[in-house]
Length: 307
Image (cartoon, rainbow, N blue to C red; front, top):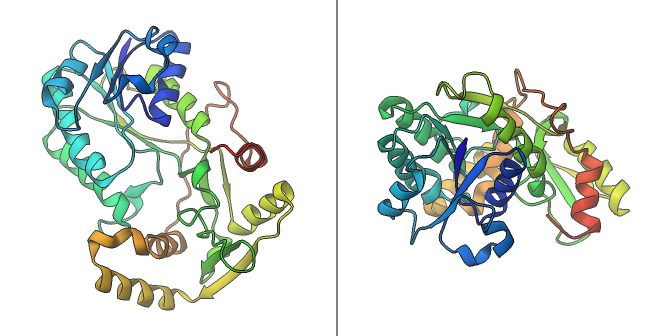
């Protein structure tokens, strides 16, 4: 199987390529700067196609020609999540590609509606447009948040390190919510396994798949953080859900959609408090790759300084 990995120079794309090569797949890369990759790695690729930007259609068409599958591993951004995604999909259509792994690797946005959480709007719009207009049935992978987002302002609890030590926040009964998360290495291993052996994938049926490394409440996250780092994390209740809705509505009105990143922690908090992110039927692939434990993920993150 010849697989195109779009965004191969990024952290996720590079790991996907290494894992695919390790599973004896042939890999072609698409990216803007081949110099970001080591020569020894480039020599293992079937080829590398250089694109000048996400709308470099000749480069996209060249990249998809003759491949069996496309994996979109673009870096997350509103333009790439929708515009770049669709342009790559259209090139794959013209080339007759049947297998297209969409850039998802996030929480199950089929459980929310457009406008609930701005970063997911682009994924919802892409899925809708593909379902209505494309000959390709994309593959979507739900993982919860990546481990690198745990203990950041944009992860569960919205970590705040200002003032007197680290704090995780919640609204309403949000401290009881379990948040799914996945280590990137786990996601990569399971993605390639689904590409190779997933039900209906080779037939071009696409579909939605869910997997996770773990699921934890913010109190469990705080305990694990303290065990690994020796630093206590305070758990702070910010108010009830009506307070949160009021504050979020005010910030959305004042700042507008262009500045959504400034109120994203509030939007995430509301969605996390009101939506059950629990995976209904997660795909278990422990026989392919054992899931990373929370303790291991935190040790990697905070003891080695890596993400």
